[in-house]
Image 1 (tube, helix red, strand yellow):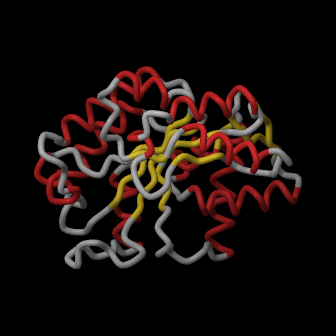
Image 2 (image 1 turned 30 degrees about the vertical axis):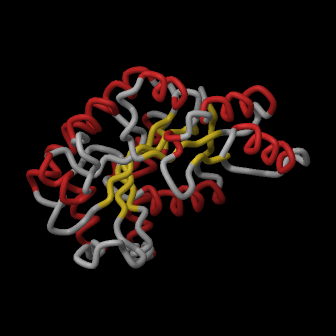
Length: 259
């Protein structure tokens, strides 16, 4: 699709300034394959600077400097990193000839060194392929170097392209989150564990408040320190905010919580 068509449609949609969380580049395919991606996001930055932009990408083209340069224009980038070993990467992704896990990792590391925005890395968990201790350990080493603001664990939640791939259970996703500690892990699969009980929420409050008395923390800081899901943290923080026991503060584009 040519850039002029995308820009024209965006201009029509945005002329009344609708409320949006993000303008997200995604869709049926890999957005970085469109060579006009940079042209479109620059148009948004110039004419609609009050909107945040997000990029969902499978990370395959981060080896190209021009792709990294265009991707760096986004406020939020969500790249995928499903496996680090060549064996697991090949089984899970069935890549085109000449593309390997090493290329993905090197491209992501190069982008992480250059990018100044917010990055959330998504990992698709396929039981029996990339959930072994060895594979999670390799992923953890790379993620610690990338240092994303969040690590999102995902799994199959609709009929897949390959019948042999099964969805990960909530227990497996939670276990992998523990193995990735102290990285800021968020489980985003629809097969979520049950919401917090009142006792568990009270226990989490007891962990959060002493931390916030010592220093302001972001959502990600608290997730790491309390070893819990961001989804559950949000629920407890919302309750504490409503009670007036904590407050929010914005600094350099980040939200901090403090007593």
